Image: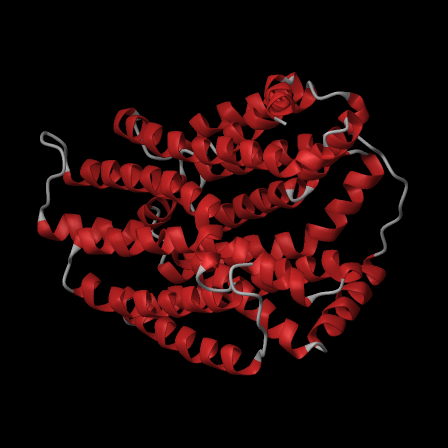
Length: 422
């Protein structure tokens, strides 16, 4: 087995798969996206609306882009993916008003939709061709580690960039460089990974099949409520994860905290955010790899719900510590939220795997993805509106209470157990 793993690690195409994830995650703008939009004069409600526009577009395009990949090839789909990303970065660079930013989000969503699941399918095909399919967990673990490494490197490099560029908007132009490298990398993939399969797409059938599969899953009450738990958790996290940017900005500017001497307050904010995101990604990788160790003491379903309750408690705690301007406690609580998010996903997959039929796995995970998009469409602008109308603290407090009440309903409704230590 060790010799096979060594052979896989030396394989040229496997290295390409690894560097694909590394370059893809060099999103240098990520630690500063909210601050950039705030700098343009957008309200928190408008920022939430932008993310809703992105999720609506991804939801609409998810299945059609999958059919496109089958029809015209997976390589072509990924080339369109990175082309769409690059166009979105150019639009963000030139953004002066909400409309241009919205078009930028739509193009970014095109990239997300064309990418979703396509590269994973190519890896499956390559492993089957090489006779290494049984080692898919090893290969995915390796490629995913490169992706998370890319996120960490991106966060740390972003500090250097934002401190030396004439304006924050130039961070989007810099981000184009690794995406061009990924575009060229995809071009170098062997043609047999394109895998064209003839199929037709009908918008009417798309609407019909989406409705039917959603109805089918929702008839299974226990499964449906676990899906609600999964999708709502991810949707809430994704909608709120970057609110640490305006929170830390306000705390640092109000308190006059100096992280590095000789830097202006706004530069100190950027340094802190880059360091924070880099550390988050490094430890999140470890959490995802090692959460299985806890299953010796508690089953997946119970731990999954415990983490949801803990999210609600942390949101309520944020209500107080943000008001007290305790920057380090805010960072610690956000750090815990990031760890929990990456630890919880494997637990959800484990629970769903035991609850659903083998014949409906693809449908269940598709519904999970679509539900998350639907929740974000509603939740992101609502959280932003409450933050504008009252405060970010109030939005976290109400969200925390909502989470605890909702999870109590889920826990009491779903009578599901797994073997201890599974």
